[in-house]
Length: 377
Ligand SMILES: *Cc1c(COP(=O)(O)O)cnc(C)c1O
Image 1 (cartoon, rainbow, N blue to C red):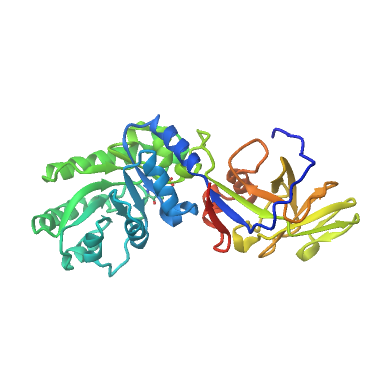
Image 2: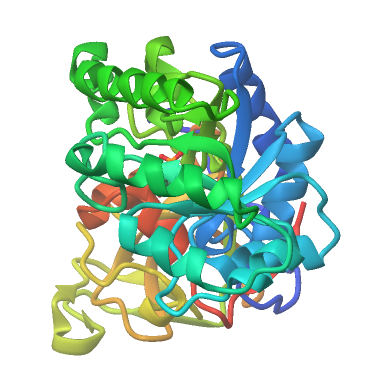
């Protein structure tokens, strides 16, 4: 870690509430890195509120940078994007039982269909116009896709449904289980299955559907997985599951110091007194805790940035608060601490928080609580 000297001068910024700021410029930079590695179309995946960064904010930034499609898991997430005025094609891939086909055709939302039963349900419903579907084939996840043994069956039904004007097959979808290994050999089986599925549906007489298999890791490491489109989620917000690129963090979590104390050596801090000061030191309290997404299980390395310097989080993480040890330095109430932000040599990144918490950066950004204020840089 580069050590920048702490700036001793501190500025009181007023008691701004804990804030998660989304940084569209980082999203644009990340899009450019992916575009340099792939000519395929890009679907911006903005499920789980854009990985916690605001679905609309991430969608708009990605579209401005060249994304041509949007993807969500949930149908309602897709409808929200459409109702906000976004006009690009939107795919939702995990649709509840008893799902309303009419809502999909009326909202212009594409649906992924991952089983014969799902397709049957869709075909039995009144839908108005044909529902645009993507056949989701299992390429090794055993999660949402149609198992290979049922490909012929679903293709037959889809053909019949398309002839009747109930559905229109616009896409063929798979998903890579092992792309984060950053080794194309790990994807070979899935790629072969995808080619096989594509050949089958073309032979059945469907127009050439848009084929998509890769997410961020495949997009960054294995061109054989790109096909007609890549689905980019984590990469948009600065997470590279393959660990091969330096993407830009697209959010910054800040909180103001709300309480200060100078304590003697041997002073226990927080519930359980799990940490005890070893010298006279200054402690400051930040109004964010595990209810706001600060992981409760963290290593002693966990720290925050203030004025170009890192200070450790000490004692247990409370529901609403953490305590930091600023040593000999005094920062007045209202001084802003950065919990995480884009990499700058000092500010902790979401990747660091993930390693301190023994998790992946995805869980850090998707767990930020609802009382944290959201802004856009
Ligand atoms: C979440 C998800 C993606 C995006 O994956 P990233 O690794 O976040 O880019 C793509 N496809 C499916 C089916 C997903 O569930």
